[in-house]
Every structure is written in structure tokens, then in C-alpha cells.
Image 1: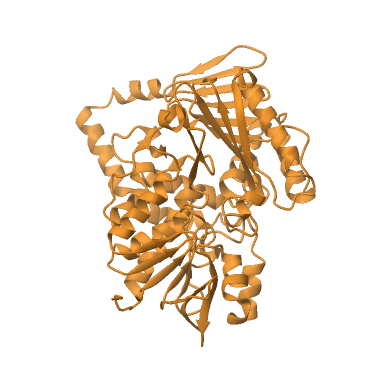
Image 2: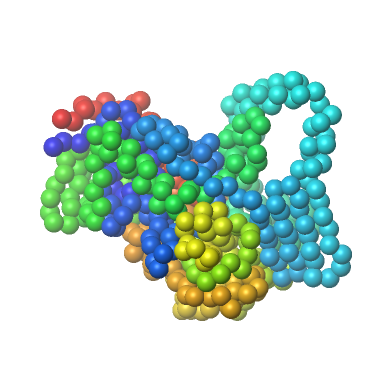
Length: 502
């Protein structure tokens, strides 16, 4: 049986590319070395709990790129989305709650502050005639493509402006810099002394493009019911229904290139599967150096790929509790003293050591959003944070500090603690990523916008997708990976002539 295209790796970037191709009628084969699809966007079962390989807020949710990919294979609406209702930021000097309407700041010392943001907005909107409001909102939504086109050249001027320098013009409050530094490392794979200001601008604009008239702002992000595995599983189900094939537990030894052209892939057992198109979701550096081999590229290109900055590695901690200890859905833990985050991340990034304080953690409580993810009466808390894969200190040190962060953030944690597991960079390397990046490439100066590596390789028929590839692709984590896969798949459908395999 012949294939029009083979996708190596069933991360959600590869699955999205498969959706774009299969949805156009192409015969697609997806090969995944792990027992199940999804990579870092997947889930396993343990003691009645559904454990995700990461803690994610999926930007766009049912209005975004994931839904677009599913629609291409007839699976629009198949993923059910849960939305966040209550969020909290736990700081060393305060706690900030947000329930969608009211923000409540409780400093360790001093009076509490309450800000009714949405109520104030509602009061202002009531002053606008209903028909005028609906018309203006509809026009705003329809004009977003034009707004994006107009803003793109302006945003490009900030490609080489460091976020640290840009934010320093407007804020002199150490906590703002701490929060932004933590946000950037987790979402863009680089701290503020490396991150491009333009990347934050593009990401914010991308989120606005998902907005629709009358939408609750919380609908701009969500969590898939059934766990993260619901996303790649739904995509792959649609690909199969469109005539494609998905094989798990199948490792690709190499991508075969002859006379400068892709001819297929070779599996561990020596089987050669032929196809004129191969899309790698196995990492840009790994693809060039290992799956293909740098001898098939000119030295300048191979060196360029080799020298790209990889984003920070990460950890994931998943804690099972025998009773609920929090009613929030997601948030962050930042226990470093104000102004201390730059020194914290420099120790991680430059010294490759682990600071002696609990790490910044993004956390979600998926069982609060979808009770089926934990046994009745129990609770699941998932957190992720930064941890370099080549740390000079044992990962177990970060594990202990992360648990301490959970204890300080969630009163009653120890009383109801059942067990936890800790996914360190070695665990993520087992998923097939040699350097275990949390996202892919660092979204830093020199690697964003037009300077981001293209999905189209110099080898005829070879493409890349995921968090590492796609010029002018931006966003956060899962959303960016799916955008990369969709853009690559659409390019192939619209520009590459292949015969439909039979």
C-alpha cells in the first residue's frame, strides 16, 4: 500500500498536519514510537485518576486551531471543553484570586483590595444601546484579519527588542517583572533577558483573533474533557475515518533520502515504507542530526539548525488527594521574594543548578473542571515548572521543592495527600525528545517571526512541524504546535503535486 505522506511522531503538531492532509483526500500514515498518541499532550490512568503529561490551558479551546484541525476530518465539536471559573496566584507576599468577575488581592500585611472588573465593564456597556453594541462587536470581530494585517509590520519592529527592556519602560514594581519572567519561561521557553517582545504581542493578537461577539472571556482558554489525550485521540480518529492510518509503538529508525529527495522511512525492524512526503514531528534538531543525517544538508544549514537555542526543559508533578483542598481551577505559585526571579532563572539557565527555594509552578486542578478525572470525593492537582535537562544537581531536589510549594499553596495538602509522581526531563526524553524542551525552540530574539525556522526543509519532500518550526508561527505551547501542523499541511495541499495513493 502506498502513502501520499508519512508523519513521523503523533504529537499534536503531527496530528494537526495529518488532519490537514487527510481532510484533503490524501492517504496519510502516522507513525508513533510510544504506545499512545499525543506526546506531551497525552494522558495515562492510575488508581482511577487520569494523569496528563503536562498542565495546560489550551488557548482558543473550541474556537481555536484545535477545533479547526478537527473540523478538517469531520470531528468538529467532538472535543468537549471545560472552562476555568476561579484562578489564583499564590505569591510569597500575597494571594490574588480571580473568579471571572472580581479580582481579590490579599497581601500578607495590610488591607485587602477588591476590584470588580467585569461588573464595572457591564455598567459601562449598559450605557450603550443594545443594537449599537451588537453592531460594534460584530464589526470588531470581522475586522480582526485587517487589524492583524495592519499590526504585523509594526510588531515586527519589536522582534529584536528584549522583553526585559520593554517592560522596564512601564513598570518598576519587582512583582511585575517576577510574574512576567515566570510567564515567559513557561510559555515561551526563555526568560525575559532572551525573549522577544514581538512574540508576546503576536500571541496576544492571536488570542484576540479567537474572540467572537458576546463571548465570555474565559472561553478563550479551556481544558478538554477526558484529559489532554482527548485532543490527539480525536484528531487521529478523524484521520482514520478519512482513510488514513495511525500506528503506535512503531519507531522510525531513519528518514530515507536518495539523490536529495525523500523516498520514505525505515522502521526499527528494517521495513521500508515509501512516500514522496515525510513530515517530522520528532524535533527539528533531532530530525536533521539523527533521523535524516546532516550529510544530506549543506554545512551552513546543518550548523544553523544545530546552533538554535532550545527552550527550557521542564518537570510535571501530579498529586492525588483523598479529599478536595482547593476550589480553584488553575493558577500559579510564586514564592520567591519580590525581585528575585531573574536571579532564580539565571541560576537555572546559566549555572545549571537548582535554587534552594520552591520553584515557580503553573498548576491546574483538572478534577475541579472535569470530575471524571478523579475518583468520587478525590482531587487531582497537576503542576509544571522549569528544570534544565543538563542540571548539575539531581532532579530529586526539584521534586522535593515542588512538593513544598504545593504544601504552602494548598492548606490541608499533607492531611489529604495520597501519592504523587514526578516527570523530570529524562521522562520527557523517553517521549522522543533528545533535549526535552518544554515547548521546542526558545521564542527568543533571532528565532521568532521571519527568523523562525521554516517547515519546508532543503531536502525535497521533507517537512517539519511542532514547537520548533513554521515561519511567522507564534502562540503558546499546544496552540502554536497545532498552528504549525496546520500551516505545513495546508502548504503541501496547495503547493505540492502528489498522486492520491491507492
